[in-house]
Amino acid sequence: MFVIAAPGQGSQKPGFLEPWLDHPDYRATLTGWSAAIGVDLVTHGTTSDLETITDTAIAQPLIVAAGIMTGRALLEALPGSTPLQMAGHSVGEFTAAALAGVLTDEDALRLVALRGRAMAEASALEPTGMSAVIGGEPADLEQALGHHGLFAANFNGGGQTVIAGAKDALARFAEEPPPGTRVIPLSVAGAFHTPYMASAVASLAAAAADLAPGEPQYPLYTNRDGSLVSSGATYVSYLVDQVARPVRWDSCMESFAGNAITGMMELAPAGALTGLAKRGLKGVPTVAINSPEDIALALEMVTGA
Image (tube, rainbow, N blue to C red; front, side, top):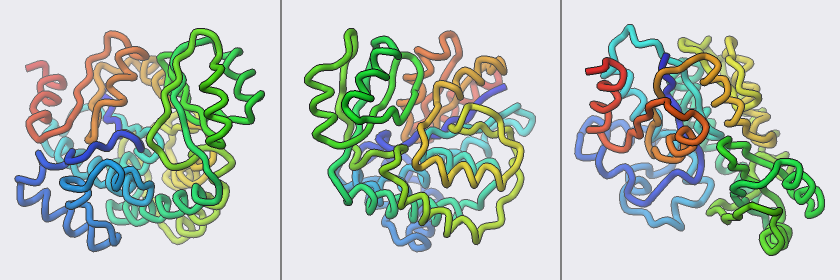
C-alpha cells in the first residue's frame, strides 16, 4: 500500500512550478484554474517573490493547485492496479479530496481560495503567528503553552509541534522555551488551526453547504485523528472545522505505520512531509515530486523496477 501525501501551507517556494510549465498541458491547466478562481497561479508559481506567495490568500490555492496538477500526472503514470491511499497536511487535505473524488478539481480550488481569503481576514483581526517547536517533553510544552496563552496547532510527529497564538506571546515563549527544545518562527500570517480562525470556519461552512461531495475512490485519511474516512460528506465537514482544530499529522503517520504502508509519495511543493516521514516512518521509502522527472522515481518505487 502506498500513500500519496499532499503538503500544506509553508511548503511553497519561489519558482517551484517552473519545472512543470515547460509542458504546454500543465500551463494550460493552471491558466484555466487561474481564470476560475481569480488567482494568477502561473505567475505566483514562477516569478512571484516569497513575500507574495506567503500571503495566505495566494499560498493556499497555489499549493492545492500544484498538488492536484502533480497528483493527476502521478495517477496517470502509475499502474491502475497500484494500491493507493490519500492524505493531506492541513490545506493539503483539499488536494487529497480532489484526487480521491470527493470534490471536483474546480470545487476544491474555489473552496480553498475562499478558505485562504477567510483565513487571511481572520488573521488581520490581531497580530498572530506560528512557530515550530523541536524536541522537549510533551508535558513541559503543554505547561508552557498554557502559561503563555498559546495553542498547539500542528502535531507533526517526529518530535515536532507547531504552536500558534499572539505574536507577543510567541516572542515570550521563544525567550524562555521549555527545556530541550528549539523554537523556529514560521513564515505564516496567522494562528491557523486555533480558535483565532472561528470566523473563517463560518465562511467556509456557508460555501461548503452548496457542494455535492462524492464518495472517496481511494482510502482517505483525515487530520482530525488520523482515521480513514469513508463518507465524502463527512470528509467535507472535517475540511470545514479543521480550520480551527489542531492538525494531527502524527496520528496520520501512526495510521500509515499501522496499515503497513510500503512507500509514500509527496506531491509538489514536496519536501516537508518526506522530511517528517524520515523521523516518524523510519524505513519507509519516500519520493518528493517536485518536477515531472520525479514521477519516474515514484514509478520505480511502486514497481520495484
